Image (cartoon, rainbow, N blue to C red; front, side, top):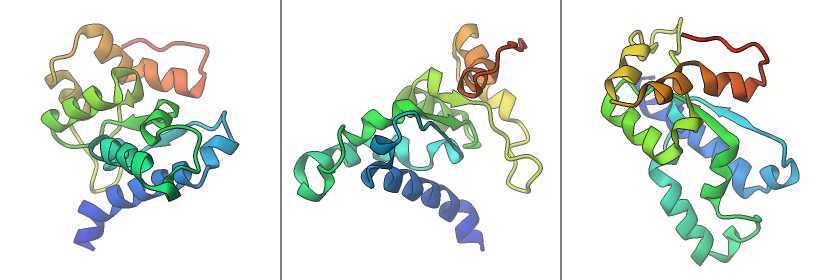
Length: 147
């Protein structure tokens, strides 16, 4: 059970998204957008590897774009429990692609997710994006909520 909580869930998240990309699902449904938990799983760390595989492996060329190019259709949550790793996720994904997450009310909840966003040293406008604007845009909410 411990392996699944700590490694399995982010790995399963990654595998699900990679399968959606390489199966061509995102090509067949160009309006499909994904909200990906676990800060995108391993995607921020593996995007370069996925792109390299696309370039050198013929079985990976069945999709229309490089795998990392599909990440623009995804929003990831901020649940990584570490400001350093969250900073890396924001850098790799882009500040517009990260939204505040908590995993509340589960036992793996990040009970200090707001502080983690504040600790990575982003400008106020970027903090506002992560805290509320990105999810509002993703959900196409018409009534903005400000912090």
